[in-house]
Each structure stands twice: as C-alpha cells, then as structure tokens.
Image 1 (cartoon, one colour):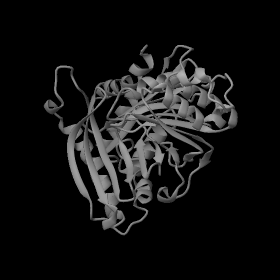
Image 2: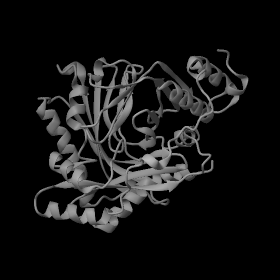
Image 3: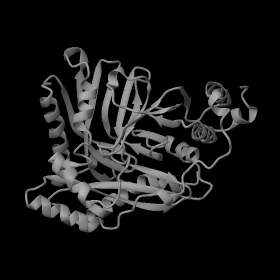
Length: 388
C-alpha cells in the first residue's frame, strides 16, 4: 500500500488511532510504549494470545497480566513492530506507515473506546476498608496490606487514545509510559516507575523494591526529602520479600543498591535495585521464576502475601483488572522490561477510570491514606485533563 501523503504529515497521535482502529477490525491488539529515560516510542500490533511459556524463550512481543494471578495473562505477538521519535519528522512517519501498511488497509473510521456500560463497580468505601485493614494488622493477621480504590472522571467525547499517549510520552522521563489496546482488557494508559523484571542481553537480571510515597514540593530538591518510619518500613518489607524469593531459588549472587529517593512525576519514592549477573549463576530461567514468585508484589498486595491477597479479594468492591498487574515488552532488541502497572487508567468513550492504592500499616491514618491515593491518581489525571 502506498503511504498516504496526509498520513505521513500527521503527528504520532492520529497514527496510533489508525492502528487501534485497524486492530479492532482485524481482532488484533496494540501497544505503544516508551522506556524510562528514552525518547523513542515503540509500537507493537498483532494477535493477542494467552501466555504460559518462559519469557526467556518467548517470541518478541508485549506481555500484560492482571493483578489477580488466577486471571489470564496475555501476549501481543509483534507481527508489526517499529520505533519512532516522540516528536517525529515527516520522513519517520512515512517509514512507519510503510511498515504498518498491511495493517492500515483495515483502518475504517470507527469508535476506538468502549462505552462505560461494561465497567465494574467503582469504590466508595475506602476509609472503612483502611480501618478494617488496620484492625487486621493490630490483630496480627497482617503486617501490611495495600488497599486500593478507583474513580471515574469525565473526558471530552473527542478525546482519543493516541492524543492522550502523545501527551504522556512527552512527560514522566523516569517512568515506563504505555498505551495498551487489548481485546480482553480494553484500553489502558499509564506511567509506571516500578520495574518488576528486567533482562538485558541475556546477561543481566534486575528487579526493584519500590514503596513509600510523598509529593515533592516545588521549592524543594529531591535530596531534601525526609522519610517517616512508616514509609521506611513499607519499603523494607518489599525488599525483604525480594530477598526471600532469591533464597527460595537458592540464589546468593546478587547486588543490592539502595534504598535511595527517586522522582516519578511530582512524586517521590524509595527504591532499591537488585541485580544478578546471569553468567555467574546457573539459573537460565531466572526471569520466569522470579516473575512467578514476585507477582503480585508486596508493594501492591501486602505481607504475608497470601493473607493480604485474601483480604483484598474479600474487602475491595471492584475488580483491579490490569491495575497492579504487570506490563511490558518481551525479547524486543534483546531486552525484556516488565513493569508493575501503577499510575494508570482505563479509557472509555468520554470517561476514564483511575486507580490507586496505598500501603496500610499499623501507623496508618485513613484520611492521609485517602489523600495519598488522590495524589497518585492526579499523576495520570493531569495528563488526561491537559489541553496541550
């Protein structure tokens, strides 16, 4: 198919909309993403398949899974794949259009986002749930549990996924910026700072303990951040769980860096990086094993792990879906990068559903935890409401 001159001159937002329309027609799924610290958008389109194999030997594609590990994880096979600058010139768009030309032949002008009718219930019982969590912790049944909530916000009816992703991709340099259009799970957008599993060139494995949240005041430098005991202990719980996973598979050869304060948007978090030189250990499927042990992490679930998950299942009145699940590219350019799907929203026609949670400990104040979730939701809401 010859590239349409009008198509080659448009920006990346309308091109993404075309891809989503085409995928909807062809029963394909689509993902666009920008890795932390990078300035190029990667785009994948292809069949959406169930995923049950090892990530080390999987075909190139995009993997995503819900918070509930009893629900299916899905994989977009990279039948169509390319990269492009966040602010592309016409020649880049021409090349991109050529790569996706077969797909774009199936791109009618169709509605790209679902109506809100299939939305699961939203939560309005957050503070009572936090109080219940504190009671369970005081009774010794839990050490920590992440209590989450969601809420619906309005979007202009003319808002498109590509338009929103264009805004998102130009911000949050230290986060994984993503747009997923899934046959099973709908359309999601997000900016996550939390690495779950990273494998580089089959030689280096990484995972991250990320917990604790505070807003960075406009007049304050990141080095001036002061953390309370609650946040320090929260982060330590996540770190200890990662180390316990290493012990489970008898892995002793790892490096630990941190905790240190990192910035993600307007928020600060405590972060510890764990690295393994794969040439020094005889665990060829380390990434797959750690993914199974880590998900869902205590940073989005709690400790003890199973008890926290049971509490969430029986207390939260809504389905987390892909929120607090994991997402990311697998075996693209010899790299796998899976992130915990936080700071995200599901998109509907004229609406978006925001999600956020906060780690509850014995010292938690329900009103402050509610305020923390609001701050986290505003990270994505600010992009959805922007007119730039």
